[in-house]
Amino acid sequence: MKWIPRGIYTQEFLAQAVSLHEADGLTISEAARRLSLPPGTLKNWIHAARLDKLDDIGKNQKPLTELEMELVRAKRKLAEVKMERDLLKKSNGLLCEGVAVKYGRMESLRQHYPVALMSRVFEVSESGYYAWRDRPLSARTQENARLEIEIRAAHQRTRETFGPERNFTVTAPNRVWVSDITYISTGEGWLYLAGLKDLFSGELVGYAMSERMTKNLVMQALFRGVSARRPAKGLILHSDRGSQYCAQDYQKLLRQFGMTASMSRKGGCWDNAPMESFWGTLKNELIHHRRYRTRAQAIQEITEYIEIFYNRQRKQARLGYLSPAAFMRQYYEKLFAA
Image (tube, rainbow, N blue to C red; front, side):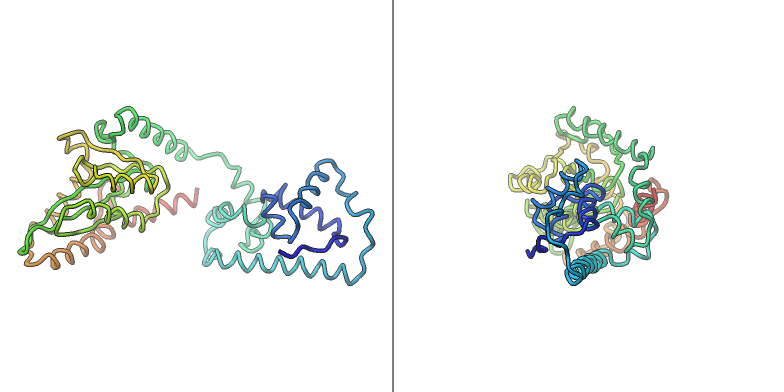
């Protein structure tokens, strides 16, 4: 990295450099990188500013020529333009969104870009952003946090079996998934279907089909669910005690994804009621009305049912008579507007 030569730092530049760390919250390393400064130099300036001695910096250095002053201004302007360009690339379409959405994006980028710059690029008030950031937590957010603590406490009380208390209340997506395997008759033999369902939205987030019921089937369904939803670590994944879910490779995969395994009690099918409910819906609305000559025919129709109808069109009473996809859109709209 090329540093700006010593001896050409103005007091205005010093103050702005310090404010990147003190006011905008950038780390010393990040702020120094954006200003092409050695981190040690910026650290010294911050220390001097806290002692009200920032004006003493550079007193013994030679005066700047007009050309040197222009060079400083040009470098600063170029650095700002580069940051604005990078910021716009990372925020495609954001200018058409509401103020709350822009504030949320600014918060996620706060460690990488100055707040003043983001406010100018996103065309929002800098003071408005800080007011939004310091707002008290909404009653809904506090209740969600409380319920999440209760769910995890129940999980621990039941020796990491989510089902025994049969508490299927979840306050946000990708917190608890349930999984299971079912089978469909075809002219070529059984077709096995492994599925993953998000308890919050009721959406089938991942699934896989095969002529064999093995650990690879449930692992493939898990890979697809993770690829589609990218859940954060800590997700609880519930299943029955089938050999596929008890397999070491499957349990190892859960740990790699940062998930917590939960299993039903022996013989307790109701501990996995949400997944059993989906299988019943699938079979009553599709499978029992078909005679599949081949597994390929069954795979095609089941895929269409899940992707086109169930996740996107089928309304559910517990979701306020919305489809899972519509319910999730409504959830994120309210979240960003809060």
